[in-house]
Length: 285
Image 1 (cartoon, rainbow, N blue to C red):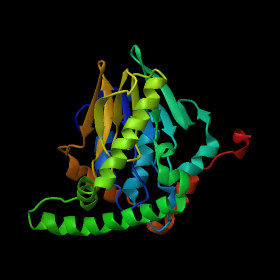
Image 2 (cartoon, rainbow, N blue to C red):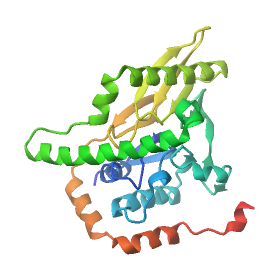
Image 3 (spheres, rainbow, N blue to C red):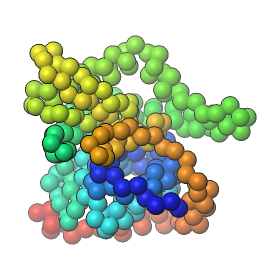
């Protein structure tokens, strides 16, 4: 494997570990290619809404182990809670060495200041009809499952991959309006609080763009996308933010073999997860 790229800051969101749509093997290839000083996990990392002990493949566990390895190597890791992992919000403020759980983060970046949070707080559906959002999550996962089967067939026939949900979002005016409203609302609040950057996840729409406020001022709005369809992350290095997408590594086949060899039986996997996340409840008191 090539030497890992040194990166000052990496932002990942919407991994949705524990769901059929999560592209964990590609995510592993990306994580194994970088050495970040700061790693920000910006919500919906483990999909607690849809978590099932019947489905948590070895590659998903390997992602958790990879992040743990980064911690032991000195990477500062911030876990920002999202709506799909909102159960972790009760542990807001938990800090252990270079790992922290927070609901939002204000971070100095060079001589500027970034405001980082998942973004579900600005989702009207989440605020007023959570049951509808949960139902939508299950519907989205079902769509991804169907899409996976179609893509397998399409690739075998040499036609490449398709994304049903992307096509739906790009062709439904309501979805486009929601995304625009979300971005503009977030930007206006960031400008009023004198932030230079505002970074979100939640809407699975990777983006970097400057947004001007209605009353003057501007902010650079960024969204790290997701690891279901866009396979994207935000990177900061040498004073510049960049939106990066997964690129196949030369040793992708070898990595896949290693993951298969390291695989664990499903009935043992859930117990392994619990063992790895055991903690002394007294530290939260």
